[in-house]
Image 1 (spheres, rainbow, N blue to C red):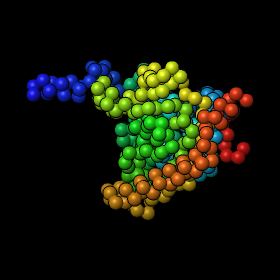
Image 2 (image 1 turned 60 degrees about the horizontal axis):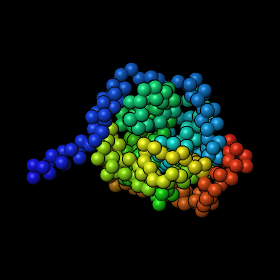
Image 3 (image 1 turned 30 degrees about the vertical axis):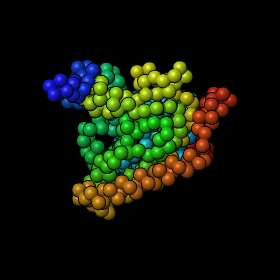
Image 4 (image 1 turned 30 degrees about the horizontal axis):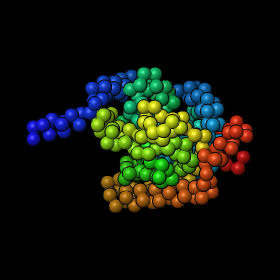
Length: 313
């Protein structure tokens, strides 16, 4: 029994637990230290680089007119393609195109990234805030746009068989935030980006064995690349899948009032409503473009990719 207990304790801490503790400490320092403010000038200089890189994915943005030009709004999207996340960069560039670099726009970002030297401060200048920091409600009250990815790493690392699924895993914090703040919610559905990588498994068991829980990391994906099976430590480059993001019409739950954020029935109904609508949109995009990787390769080989396209332009 004693041996089993020691083994269980080792499994709980994991092989990389000491390193995880160091990184977690750095994240805490970053979050409680001097916060680098969002820098509109930096955003303006950064967006052209994003748009140039996005040519590889022949990006198309639809429904941008559904995003309010001013005022507080919560934008919610599905998360794809591991840490490459081309759809995320597309959404950010589209928001800047629609509302301008000077408009207050922020994204809730994985805490881990703030612990990486230089990366954390750069993300802050782009408008990133820690996902678990509780800053969203304050920023919405100040009239800002907030971009959130409720599915987190579990969705971004979902297996190939689930590539065309909306997987928020019951995370309803965004619904409660919208209800408390009384702001519209604009869903954005991304299609094609998760076809760019072949994820065999999320690797939850491996993540636990490595002791990544201290960093709030629950996955360590196992991937299939040109050279065979590999992991997140040696990820293959993404394939040039054609990526489409579609801004849907806003959902307005303000009639429920802020107290509805504490009503589980209302929260669940809103969650089911928006995720169901997002899945229907994703299904439609899949039916329209069933082979995004082939379409992307065709664009890349014939034209060297395609600049970001807005609607029918």
